View 1 (cartoon, helix red, strand yellow):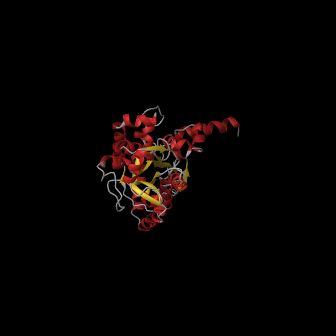
View 2: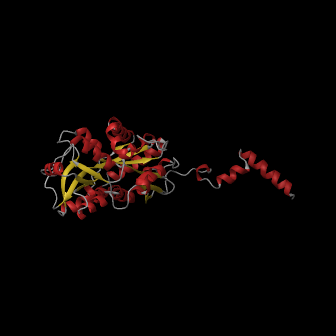
View 3: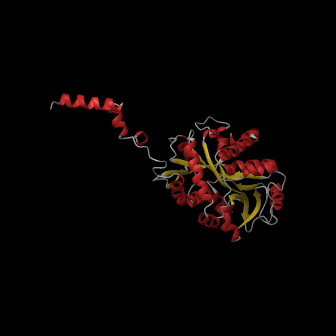
Length: 339
């Protein structure tokens, strides 16, 4: 049989299928255009965490991840993937993590954590990221940020305020432009705290700076510093929440700033890239709901001090955008520190 006859027959066959030889070659490389569509999720999911291992976001992500794959497979019948792989991307104060998520393919295989304070970096400088365009999957809960001092430090918030009038206090507040820094700026300005904000990469570094005596107080999240607080190595001075669970320790709400209290919380938001389909978003949200109501998971979460308080999909998005608006309303105040 001649080569010309074989090639002609092959082209005729491909025309009957309505495709060309180039399409066949591409189908061999791209799973999404194969004849048989896989049920989502068909592969592992990359979960981008913008902090180093050991921080609050990282601890919570690692506690949820082992349950997520099974939950996705139960939610989406016939799925064969869904196992979550945690990837810590900390470069540029977490901005690389946000960029990775923002530019990922909208196929449901890249999700990540969002620190709402990072939005403020876009208020005074151009950015490739429009934080409002992320797909908001779930607010799995929140953590109160607390201001702490060492066991030999200030006995109370009032004592710190009085001492600061004589000599400026050094306050460890986390990465520049991150949520902890934004919260510290707002509290410093509204409550007239006589302190200078000192930047460290995160909660662990803030706590270490206090214990070494480099600063007199610092900001941490409750779950990440719980062991040191319970051991008496750190003393709580203020709680960035509506109410305080610490006897004799004031909260922002109790000091008369309930709106600031909501904005100053560490909101645990899980996001996907822009334009993630409603079907995939709902599948992910349903899977997270299974995890966050799983009795075994809740027992484990309690051990790290995490108390889930979820909002799903559009409700999570409304909360985030409300916080963004609060930042916008206080842009003039934030500009003094961020530019």
